[in-house]
Length: 622
Image 1 (cartoon, helix red, strand yellow):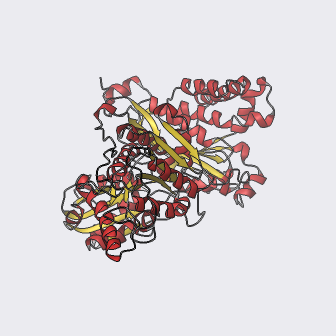
Image 2 (cartoon, rainbow, N blue to C red; image 1 turned 180 degrees about the vertical axis):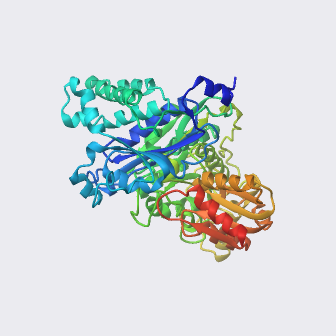
Image 3 (tube, rainbow, N blue to C red; image 1 turned 135 degrees about the vertical axis):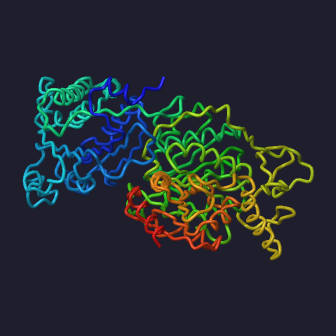
C-alpha cells in the first residue's frame, strides 16, 4: 500500500526532501567509485528512483593529490521520477583539496560541502593549486561547509585492529559513507554484508572498513552539528510495481545481446579487444557461458571483427565491441561483412576523441562514423540506446535486424551510459516475440546470393549442409550466381540492392513517436542517445509552464523511421542537443531539408538540464 507524504513525515521526524544530488570526490585511490556504488545500492533498497554518473581519470594512477587525478561519483535520487544524474550539487563530499578545487563550482549556492580537514596540508593545497586555504580565506562563503578531520577519526576507529596508519587511512571512504548514511537515513547492513563477502579472505580489512562505516554513522548521531546541518529523509518513489535492480548500460547491453541470441535461437560468440569504456561488456559476457555465450579476447581490433564475421559464416551470431578508435580499425572488416552480407552486431561505446582523446569521458561524436564511415557505398543499420536500462531492448533489436536482414548493425552507446546506473524493471522475457534465424537447407537452384523477396537479406547457410557448399568473399559477386563479377551493370545492381535492403528496414520499425507534447508546435527538441534524460526534464519544465514544446528521441538512426521527415516539418523550430559539433543536425538537414539548429557540447561531460532549458527559452523568444 502506498504511503502518503503526510504519513511518511509523521513516521520520520527528519526533514523531508523530494530529491537530492550528492557527489563523492577524492583522489583516484580513495575508493570514490566503490563508495558511490554502495550508496547507490542502499538508495535503491530504500525505494528511491535514482540515476548515477561515475567520473574518473583515464590514468591508472594519476599523481596523488592533483586535480587531474580526481575521481568522482554523482548520484541524483528522489521520491519522484529521476531521469538524469542531476545538475547542481546539494552535497559535495571532498576528501582532499584537489577534490574541492575541481568540484566546488558545481555546488549550488547554499549547498553543503563536507571536507576532510585532515588532508588540507600545505603540500596538498599546493598540489591542488590553492594559493590560500579555501577553508579560511572566505572563498566558500556562499556554501555551508562542514569541516571534519575524517583522516584522524578514521585512524582512531580502526586502531584497535592493528593496521598501519596507511592501511587504516584507506578506510576513510567508508567513514564518509557512514556519515552520509546517517544524514540520509540509509541502512548499513547491505554494505556490511558486501564488505564481509568482498574481504572474506582478509577479515581484518573487512572489520576495519565496517568499523570505519559505523564510526562515521555514530559521528553523525552524536556530534554537535552546526544548526544548518541536519538529517534528511527522502520518501520512496511511486514507481511501477515489479522486480527492479540497478543496472549499468554495459550490463544491460550484455544481457540484451544474450536475450537477442536466445530469441534468434543462435549461439553467440563475442569477439572483442579491451578498450575504455567498452571493456565492461566483455567482462559481463565472460561470465555467461551457461547461456550459450562464448567470449574471445583477440590480439587486436581487426582480428576481433574478422573473428566475429567468421562466427556468423559458421552459423552463429558474431558480435564485436569497441569504442571509436577501435571501430575505426574494424572498418575494413565491417565492409567485408557488408559485402558477404552476414549478420554482425558492432557495439560502439563512444568516448571523447579524436585519437586517444579523453578515454573516460563521454561524447556522441561517432555518428558520422556509424552512418558514413566506410569506404564505398556501404550502408548498415544504426541504432542508439537512450539510457542504461534501454540498452537491453536496443541490443535485442540490433540482433533482430542483423539476423533478419543479413547485415552489420551498429549499436551506439556512450561512456556515460556504459558506466551510469539506474533502477531497471526486469522484463518478463516471455512477452518478447522470438525471431528464429532461418537457414537454407534446400540445394535446389541454390547460390549464396539468393534473397528473401521481402527483406532482401541473402540466404544464410551453415557450412557442411549437404549440397550447399559455397564460398563468399570481398570481391563483388554476381547477383544471379554468386560468382565473382566485374560486370559494371552488375556492380550497379548489387550496390543498389544493398542500399535498398537497409532502406527497407524503415518498413519494419515503428513510426517515430513524440515522447512529450504534440505532433506539431513551436519547438521540437530532437535527440539521440544519452541526451534523453536532460532533454526530457527540460521539456517537461517548459511544458508545465504552458510552452508548446515537444520532445522527439531517436532509437533508429539509419534508416530513420519513415514518418520522421513529416513529423519534423510540423514544427516552427527544431533543436538538436548533441555531445558533438553537430552530426545529427547535418544528417537531418541532408535527409529532410529541415532548418534544424544544433545545441552542441564537447566537454566530456553530459548535458545539464539547465543548458537545454536555456537554449529552448532562447528559441521561444525569437
